[in-house]
Length: 158
Length: 158
Image (cartoon, rainbow over all chains, first blue to last red; front, side, top):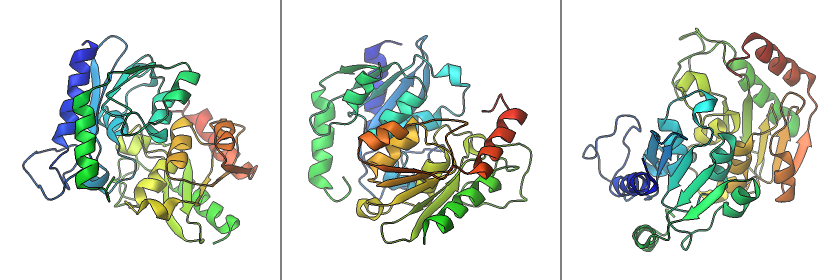
């Protein structure tokens, strides 16, 4: 799986999130419950040898969980793999990673982080680089539009 | 709630974890299922005005989750409070926090991290201090004993 394919999954995950609410993270049915505009940040985690090992999106509102961001949800959905499975992986995320997700990438030995954009939010990119992680910015207008739409419509949730 | 009281909750959480396995995090029954020796790291999160807002322990094995460490489980169990509820809080944890939990504390504006010990594992304490977070080491022999026992009995899980 190349960067474009994996990044497309992260964007797809972000869009899945738009009208979703209160749906169990591991039994996701898009039509099951739609009551809340939720934060659209998606992520995909791809192993060193190019295999998708996890994908997910922000579930802060859906799960009432402060720890299920896009990147941590992708990790969560990977299950509990041996530590070696994560080493050298690439995290694709539609938005610059916050401090928690930055730390999660460091903990699991992610060696590249590919982000959609960092205009609407700038996270721990400098610290990732300082710790030897490659950071690639796709400068995606689509990701920026998703975030700007959300921030405009739901400033209190952002 | 003072430091001693809050730290005691973190230790209690760590001990809860010892013989627990496969139990849903929000419906915990200590006797429900006991098949796995699990990682004993506990945490408690106390707000700026001294109220317990979350408590939890490592659920990596129980949930098959790579993101439920002690500190992140305490955050998870707090539900989704307004961001202001976390600002200035203190995170009590039986072990020096890993990179992910370090980042989670930074994200939520935790201003103090009280740790049980850092002899068995040294996490992101230097970075916490660099970012202005106070770090207090309780140098707890009890916490060190819990970790050493686990590492000795289950080196493959640690």
